[in-house]
Image: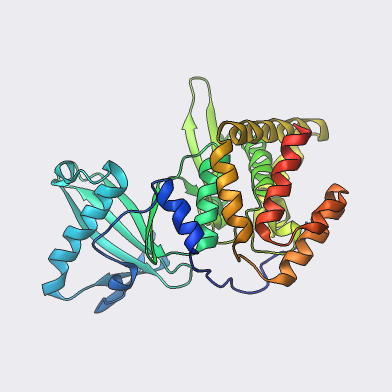
Length: 343
């Protein structure tokens, strides 16, 4: 176990015309009445605390009185676009209760809390600056993982649905000592999550960048680990930054695997996950190839990081052809091709 962290804060990459064309063809472009920059015009803010009185590092923001009513209506319409393809009739009983702003994340997101007037049930969605790294990450998650992702883009604005689950770091703190926790199933899921991240080159999966989705089954409980931060898609140069087990923040999950799984079992779960990913690639072959063609031409990292990653992947797989890759998109393509060949 080594202590890893990305070397520098990642810079955002603008959405290219080719990526924008892909998003248009796949229905990811939507017209919206509010842009990210509009939300920056808040006039007041206060710290947001959780139910235990701890500072969440989010700010709850407010806007001028003459702007607030119209803004809330427009934000509700955006939620309708995200959830019901713009059918605002079913949204008449909803209202915006709170707008939160996070200053420490790469995407500096706004989180919108939507509440049902009839039963006080609530949901969230996010408005962020559009970053091509994150968009590729969301798209690969949608195609290659067992999870479907709902998002859309408009110019420099990215709108994402909320991914439900318990943040990985909170799960360690609050759930690891629960006698009802099925440690073996959770360990199995961490192995599979570890494999998914490495295959699709999603980096920086420290415990606070993913959630645990807990689903009661007829006999026991199932767990799924879901990434929630996609900013480090195909950006870092070091291979180990794409493998969650190497982050010190994930040590409790690694120890769980070491306690309950032997080498043969780990290899079995890795093989199962790679076969499932290969099956998803084959069933979405056209979309995968279309996205790879766009990604290969895109700038998603620095020449130094690309050089480091192709050297480390070449050494890892003992395949020299990785050295011929000139972009992160080409490295992604080679990684997926190797998966299909081995499968």
